[in-house]
Image (cartoon, helix red, strand yellow):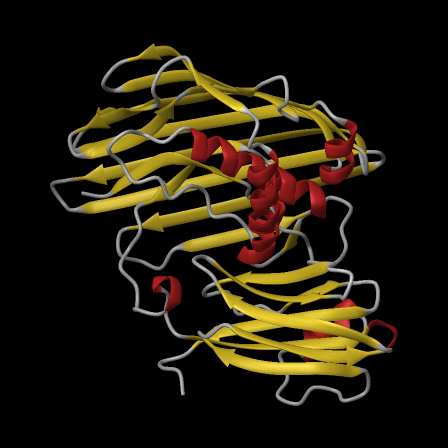
Length: 387
């Protein structure tokens, strides 16, 4: 039986490149907030891996957890899984109602799913998130003042001939205020259809996601489509502003949007850090004055990198590595980390200012980001085995 579980909050958000986008910090903070909600609403007796945060959101999440030591967490009821199923096909949804608050707590957060109609084969529910940073010092630190999201979740299992199907619709819209972007609005939706014909052992899945964000005079939109039919290769498309992007770029952009999302049960993978296949990565740092973002993305795919402007370079296969280099009288610590879902390359200045570029396992498209002085590039590919 193929089974899908909706128990994670995902920020399906990548940028066209990992350059210094105005929304980059907001994406990380939204990812950290989603991780906080998931951490505070574990389901008794079940594993709670939480959402797959980008390395940027993971770093912000650690800071946020420390800042909430004086907060209280209140639940109106224990979180539970609600199952929509029929004849071996099922979708699981997470029901919860959580409030994080307190006189010395820097935030006021309320997040919940409210069931409107529920049966064994049908679910209609609402989803709400409201958050406010109360203290100026935390508004300055996280660059976010407030957030309000509202949405709907609908699923209905039905039998048509020999085929069992579950249409799914999730839609979320809301707004917030950032010190960097001002007032922003966003909306996202997921439309899916899961089908199973037990008589022929045929399974199919069609999942489409749309997202849009508006701030100042900017309107960014994203689209994703995944189609699986039987044993054929999945058809996958990701776009941002109608331009094709890699899965890493798309997922990084989507981290700006907090919503209940479909995740498939994990499959067994090769036994390497994070349970992933052996992966070899090349990472570089270039003088920003002598290389452009687009040029570096192109050059990363060539066997010989240009030497003009090259400050540091290295390679590693599924092994964390730390080192340092000098540039314009400054010492930079650099590090490549092989995490559970993401591989990241970062540099840190003497003033403890860190910048990261990251890529999902299995994504061979080069990613590039920029600091005040440097361009950082990272490209990875699966290999049969590490040297």
